[in-house]
Image (cartoon, rainbow, N blue to C red; front, side, top):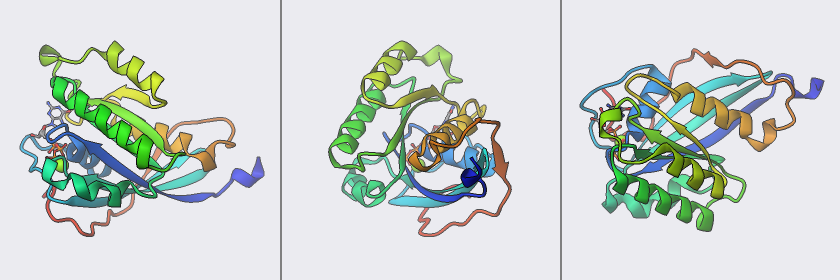
Length: 200
Ligand code: GTP
Ligand code: MG
């Protein structure tokens, strides 16, 4: 048990999903605690980092927020290759975005790191009036494909910290850590490199 103390882990995490699903908004909420109604579409990809403390360990997420526009699809392997974790994001008001999420899962299963921790985020959970994807369908799909599933809202912050924390707990190197406890978001300046667009 003592061996789990003071572990520092860097974990590359990639967000994938349809254009407009809310990838950048989830990252902006998680890293800066902000939300903007008119988030610009990502060009290429944007990099962020954020650290969470899980039990006695510290996980520094190195986050690649990819662009959902189809013309950037061929860049995606650069970002998911070697990634320890992925969040595949769809918009609960948009069935096509759920179909697109399934395609990403297939691609990761075929080409990604086999030990990758994968989360499925049904985002825009605040927009219940416009719901097009039943949570039961997403949950079943996630269970069948070895992902864990949460509905999130970058707007209200619902389940945003939780999804990153759950990923941190599931990282293989943290699996032996006993007695899961609460999450602490470590307050540290964020770094941005290669950020062609995003979030000003
Ligand atoms: P690309 O970069 O083009 O791939 O899109 P993206 O997946 O990064 O989506 P983005 O974060 O840019 O969000 C698209 C739009 O949806 C923006 O206008 C956001 O304000 C809005 N949005 C994102 N998340 C939520 C949410 O949880 N609730 C609501 N109501 N709107 C959201
Ligand atoms: Mg984006």
